[in-house]
Length: 381
Image 1 (cartoon, helix red, strand yellow):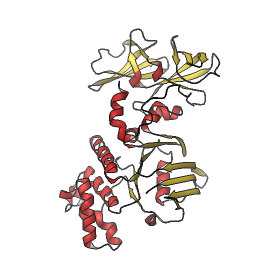
Image 2: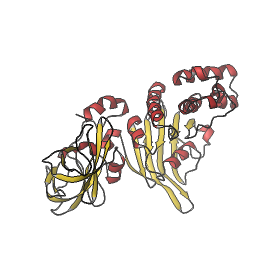
Image 3: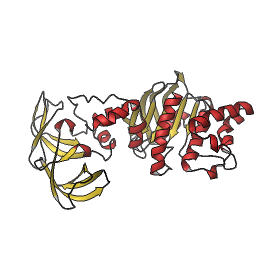
Image 4: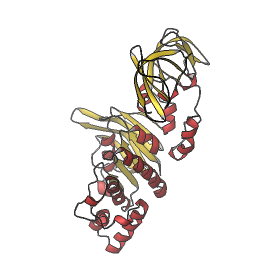
């Protein structure tokens, strides 16, 4: 059993309010990811959970017990930082077992625990090496192993992959997801990379300006973002936004006038909207399709050929639209193209940036990370 509950947590540094009344529940064995832009408060929130920072107000509960006055060493947590923080003069085995050595654990018990963690992390052949003889990914696995041997109730990861190159980050994402399943542990992970959040999380917590914008499964946030910020932050490349105007709204959806004069009916709740109301239409690059009879038109400014797919950056009035096409698309820079989209893929946002509720619940919206293998294929169909 390892649960976490935050109740109206705030944090201020003098007159600067960094965390502004956060409420959150993390269930037993969940993999929860805090994500948001730099300065949103995600690392500060993590440090308060770990006990490295004190909360200005509110309560932090682990397994129902209030932890505000409990020191970091006594909270039963283990934290993995962005920097590996390994002792250069110690072997991998000594680094992994150092906390147990300080706690007075016998040499035999230390080695037993280290060997168990090394087997999980595939570090057995490296136990006699020192950090300078390891790759970046191996060093990070040692840092994770150092956390595993403590047998914590909750693992805390503070941007642990940001120092690795792109290929290693992909490999370590897979290893961390596998580790979560094998340990069956509660994990909280901080990152600014929404791809990491989407691929690893059971539940994503999107933060901005010290406040939670939305909490939900990766597919829920992808298909049903609560507001324009979440819609633009979750998904890569980010969502496109176009100014539109309400033509008609009824129980079946909202008809809007598109830039260029076309109209489309989006299945969203908006029966109280009047004709002429200004909205924003959001559509993801992967949901736009080149179509000679499509309602939208623009000039290609940049082409990025990535092999299996090509990114088209299309100037449409003042907006630069991103569109994902087949890798062998024949268009060139400065070509004029027409394109469109399925209305069921579109989102509408009001003047305050709030999403109009969709009339269609996407069948994959409630899936968690462990279901994403099947989900990723279904989304593309």
